[in-house]
Image (cartoon, rainbow, N blue to C red; front, side):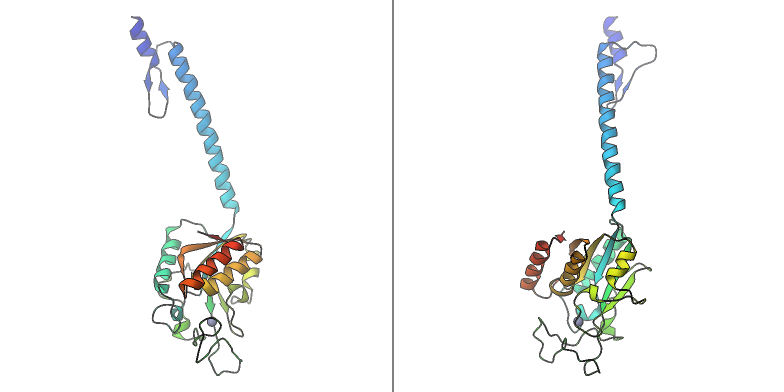
Length: 251
Ligand SMILES: [Zn+2]
């Protein structure tokens, strides 16, 4: 009799630690102990949920933008200044945006947007004998197919285009302006952005310059390493080191 009461009172213990007492039984000390354990466990779970909720709130309060740097045809295979895997990076950026893994308040795409060589603007950015460090073959000429965004890149309809390089080399997106003539810093500030992810082409030049300027503008900056590609391995490694030293997170 005693053992059957005990069995009945102990009840059923479910996977989550919940004890169900059968109706009509009295809780003996074993069952009370179980109930205490369950109570403690519930309080732990509640505490953990509160922690998650604080973290989620913290994440919501962080207003992040994605800056997609110069994913243009001329910087992709087949272009006049092709970066290896530029087209793959374009696809990956599209997949990343479609995944929704990160919420962006704004998506900004920068575009190199140079005047044609031999035009009225003196332009030391281009050379017939480029050194691929400070001078380059003509690329991203305003209105040319080479200046178009790469077809693998799918941006949200409300993405903001920032054009740069109309009168100077302009490696950094922060030298560019949108169609309303707002600078990149201005449009991020007006959207309350405090943190940016920088992706695109090329790691060792325009991505680096843009990430460094973002940092200099007081933003929290991450560079997403799967979504960038560089001109050359050495300069790419150096660029990543420089960015890290400036407080940019390379993820
Ligand atoms: Zn350029």
